[in-house]
Length: 297
Image (cartoon, rainbow, N blue to C red; front, side, top):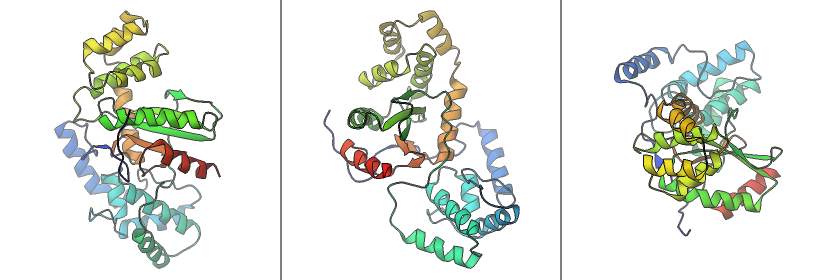
């Protein structure tokens, strides 16, 4: 498969991720709640307070409520974390505030550091975030030193292109890398959510990766007829598969993985995380293997 990459990641964009799955009444209720509470909340999405005493956490919160996010949103850091948890800029700056506060720096010194960070070019790897991998499909040796987590959409052309690159990465680093898959079907892709649920129905019968490969091999056809054909090809229990799929047994799980992705900073597909650090570069095997080898060191 031949295709060209340009510098930086190429993704299907999810231009409005915050509250994107809520009904209209719930959307406005959540939006009003966010506007009313960002100045008083004591927990912020994606912010790890480990290592801070109660007093230092309060001090860090005050800095985040006073300092602006530099992503262009015109919001304060704490406000941006509450209203747009997918923003990687506010996540990075907030992590710096926690780190600087933990080391004993005052608000003025932290401000100077935030200005310095904002002037730097985007890093290839963001600061690490916690990702829950319980129950997620995995490929590779369990003791691999590098964990790649992919949030993906079966109807996204860039996810389809990334499949062969990821396989080549695993071929070149067979003992060093393991891969986890998480669902992130975009609203703009009409068949993506159904395909996501179908893949989890296949996982329930131990055939996630086989279904994953067939879904992408048949891209972009994700029709019901096509997916049922994949299930038959995999010798799945068709009665159980269709029951699980048609009853939307895994819909809540798909939605939970989307929400987890938004908190982690996913704003488009595919999004890759290396040992918890979001990757911001071009996803071709040669480039990624170089980054991963540096990560091993």
